[in-house]
Image (cartoon, rainbow, N blue to C red; front, side, top):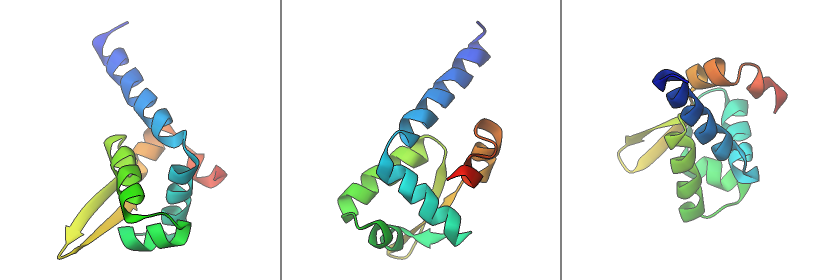
Length: 96
């Protein structure tokens, strides 16, 4: 196995671990349905989780390359990384 294959495997493992949680799948669904960017607070409200719990889930999804976040003043916004889904999970978003 080459170094590139090992790196690709590690990326896939991180992605699958991130998606192996019901709350994180729901976060992905909410962002997908919005078809754009949402504030972290909006996502937390839609799935009824606390700010600290949402923050933990956002970090896990961001570390796996599944979402990106940006900060504007006091608000954080999230959106899907469609490039990651397209490369590693083609068609996945349509199945949710």
